[in-house]
Length: 417
Image 1: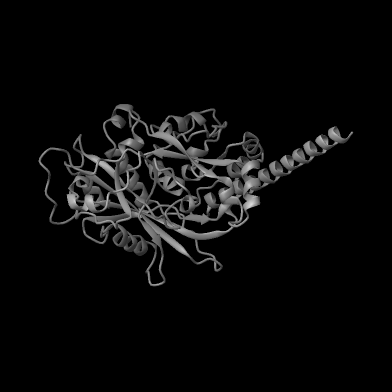
Image 2: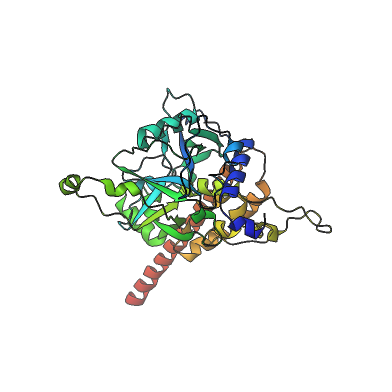
């Protein structure tokens, strides 16, 4: 695909991604006997017709191949969109390792995908994603106008720094096959945000990267240990996670609220920024990774060694370049596993980042990476990274404690001697 063809629109990229997802078996993680809980989310994609006379829904929904050959889908002004939602009351399985207990700024809101925990009566992850979507936002994915394209790799949701498994998360990708579908009906505490894919994958207007700050003490210490929280806050500081500031399509129904409803119960001020981060960002980047062009075959004389510039030649590489993620020779973490790199935090104290960087975890990940779909490579890599964080935190805390003791001892010696 040439640069001009890439700039023509996101429909060809979307078609490539969905065909590859349908043909690629996901990495499925079996629940261990000690933790059987699972959850599932739905990544819902639609193509909004152009402003030209809108086509009617076909009598029979097309196949995936026929869908991407339809004239209204390939119209230059057709707009592919993906659905995110913002929960005023987050749930534990809303797609982020840290989101459920995070204190958000009034100026920003964090988004996720519809979904939730699997119930004992659910027939599987797909059923869970469809049931939770219907219960939460009123979209019936069992209708003929929707199709399940496939499943992305399973995720492990853990406690702070991966010390304990909470549940396995399964993401499913759905496509709206018709130009029109029944309107959504979300519960009062949930708002929907259809976001153009062009705002995530366009080289002309790349996504705006930002960060989400998390207090390390709230994640690394017991809930009722006030003194320990103060010490960790002083010694460790905070953590920053990469995030994308979304640019959703304006909702035309937002102005339809009745006047007396607005007078009886004024709506809270809308946040100025919608931020996509954590596992929800990882699943979005995984979807984008299916749009990446194949790596060119090695040239003669290269001895089959990977050329780091081949990854950079992909049109999506600039969009998937995470903030503060280094590009090492022969190794691009954000290109090899975008969902993995997206949940790596950066600490506010540079020495913590230094010890993590020099712990050798990248070498372990590079040597352990594999395309075997039966192996949970990303889970193993996360475990390696979390182990490096724990070691770095021990080193930093001990060093700071020794520094404090030395300072106090020196002050006492200076005063009394």
